[in-house]
Image (tube, rainbow, N blue to C red; front, top):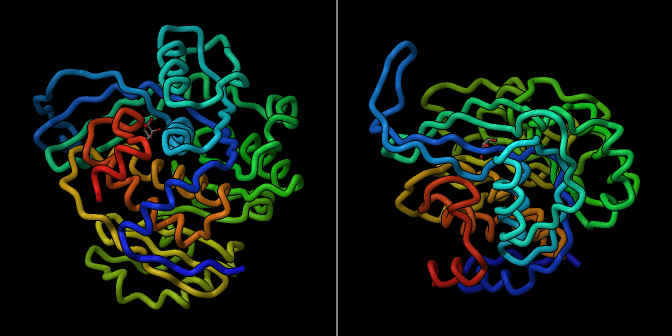
Length: 327
Ligand code: RIB
């Protein structure tokens, strides 16, 4: 039965009580070497920054952490290195309630990023894959049984594309709902990955590049022809997609229809990992039997909460913290 769309904050936040589903996430874990600055440096420029912080990150680990913190049962598949960052990353995920028993250790440094965050909470990120490059097709094959026990699978592109594609295919064949976040952005996705995935998650810039849309500096996405975009997205291979629009919220494209999800306004401190919290919540919602639109409404709150704290996983809230913040 199709679920009613809800809008009242109390009704949306009440969905947190329904989050019990099981999720598999395949991909990356990174130690985020983060410095805050008044403004981001221009190419060739040096700016002063605050104290360096090493924070738990990685798009996949972030998705897993956000979903587990709001109550989903989450198992993460990936690789860490043989260094102190490995213990740090696995410890943080375990504390968040993520099952990391399937994560392998490889002879490489753990994944890392260098992040700068400005006074408005905007960031730049440079990613060094390290151990994440060792998430191989063989590893996915070996992990198949555990991987396919979940209801939904979350993927991003911080791991080798062959392994991402194989994970999608295995999950698809086993009947899981597969969500793929095209980030870091790749302009061309393998057809096998598109075929095996159910829902694409992109931001407006990634969507424009993927669908060859004309995006100008002052594009007003609220006035775009979203039904047409939904049709173009379906032609591309996704009848369901989530397009995040920054401060304008997000758009859910589903079977030819477009539904705007309002943003939840907050004073942003650091937007690092907000998109991952959004995706983690959608994975959690879908695995718990909540519709895509309602999951995205809840995701607006979960990601808004994340924007008010520093770092990615370090800023994620539990169901109770999120409820208390917005009710
Ligand atoms: O999306 C945010 C994440 O991207 C950071 O945690 C960083 O590790 C990079 O993977």
